[in-house]
Image (spheres, rainbow, N blue to C red):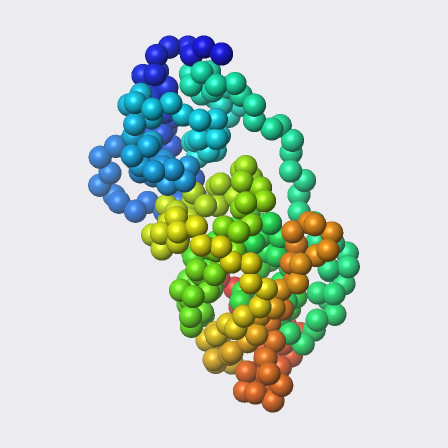
Length: 291
């Protein structure tokens, strides 16, 4: 397929498109009230697309040819519709071979839901792809937050760990826990690197948080299924909990995360108080993060 025009036409289209977008359009906070350019900066587009600023700059300047994979990430970062994506590929002289299959919504397996319902004395969460929070019990809502008050599209463990002040503040070893979560997502990304929701999550967190940007670029991977987490809870104080995850055997990528404490320990007693309190509360009385 030949290009519509020279390489400068591709750069002009990219510049025009990023000028039409603003951080608010992407659900991101405005970080500088004295912006000198309309729309997104080059470095912001590069971060959203998970490519280097130098590469994106050379692409806009017509000094490098984009691969099909880079075009796909740019299309997602710039929120291009189908017609705009076809135009982007044509300008770059590439065939648009993007897969058209729609990914089915994630649904908790009935057996996993039953198991979650039976865990009444300990916090438990069902995690899906990209560490999405698919289901939880009352103990998990009491420990973390009332997830039902969070829009489904934002109900992601990693996203909340970096952006939610309550979730972030309660982790006494936040950096350790956050780096492990980034490594887990990096490990998972190899299974479906073309997942558009994964690209959006990584791009948004890269713009929002410098630590995430640095740790994602390190390519550290972690498939740990157990560990220890230390929390400071507003109702019961400090907790040291064992965190164990079990993967669903059906290949869905769903995992059950359970938090327990050594019997007889202060954390165990505090956890019993917390879960007992949660079982008696209507959902509107559970702690929630400000929205």
